[in-house]
Amino acid sequence: MKKIIPVFIALLIIAACNNQVNTNSNKEKNTMTTTEYKKAGWINNTNVYEVNVRQYTKEGTFNAFAKELPRLKEMGVETLWFMPITPIAQKKMKGTMGSYYACSDYTAINPEFGNLQDFKNLVKEAHAMGFKVIIDWVANHTGWDHVWTKTHPEYFEKDIATNDFKIASGMDDIIELDFKNPDLRKAMIDAMKYWITECDIDGYRCDLAFWVELDFWLEARTALEKTKTLFWLAESDPVEHADYFKAFDACYTWAWMHKTEDFYKKNQDKNILDSVLQQYNTVCGATGIPLWFTTNHDENSWNGSEYEKYGDMAKALAVFSFTWNGMPMIYSGQELPNMKRLKFFDKDPIEWNGKYELHDFYKTLLSLKKNNAALRAGDAAVTTHLLSTTADKNILAFIRKNGNSEVLVLINFSKEKISFNTNDTNLAGKYKNVFNKEEKDFTAVKSFEMQPWGYEVFEK
Image: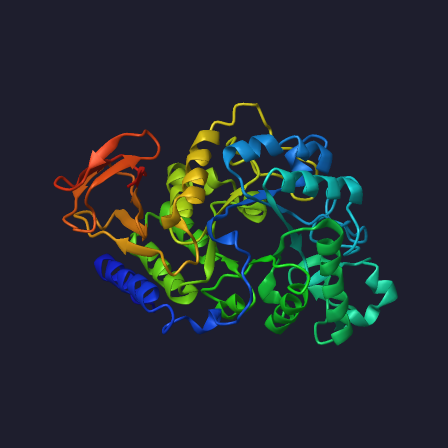
């Protein structure tokens, strides 16, 4: 039976963890982040925009998506993550078009999207506009008719009962690779290198990274860093797999995503959120970067849109994602906002209407994240201070600082209108609300009134 930590105690613990992480980062650095790899200099204040090419436009091609680059640039998007761009296996294919994650050739382009030159042109154009480009890499498994099933069947695990390839857990359209085979490892690394040398990509989002042995990722990063310093993003939650920070710069926050959904739908106490944040502070340390999100391709298709999951809390969670320590992610269509579940194995385009109702909302947050040093991720120079308020049961209030840069964030995690104040001496001076540009002086008066699921963000 789990112990329930009172919210004020949880907040004190988080504050202590933050202070320890930031003031003793060299002495107390988490053992999971000690591997010495050169870090890409742009990752600390970047953001990630996940691109679902199939559903992004009616054409579903690289060339059609390229037309969206100016809009995304103006909104403030920095890093484009493309879901798998490799061809899809036809044997045991799901739906009418199959899963991106059932690859048939690691060094070819899915003809659904165009050809290799189209992708190279897209990357070149994106780079010219200041974007970084990462691609989804599915190392754990392939589709049933991947080219290696014929040329190198020894690369795959075998099912003793059927004497055939081993089906991946819970998904019968994919089969497991055998990472005990050193030749498979070399072939996989060579395939990853192909996209760096051929297309000049900037990194990898590694699908189900924790399903693959950590020592492979260490081997792959060591080898590929000789070609280019990359950004490494793992679909692996550090709360459960902290070791993966040895190989990756950033990791998913699945635990936070699930807890916030439970919190909203089951009217739970905010202390469950405080406890999860405490865990992330502990395992991420000063340099591990958590990736925050309210939806992605899996969640949207299988579990519902962010509004099905979080309702009126969705925008407040987005504000959290952009302001707490870590890296924020936006999924295709969130700026619309997209309210529907996109089909996974069939054509089902986002229903763009030209309005982009949340464009300015995300632009404000993206700009703040990019330009304010207090919001840098994985930077030991940044401190996070939790404010003690008269409404700690409902309000998450914190200040992030980096030198003279400072950001104040207030989020009402309740369906009630809340009035509260704080006597915290860390809050003092003049601040400007980043959304409505209203200026406030909190030197003497430190009182607030917030609407249900409301949020306020101030820049000092």
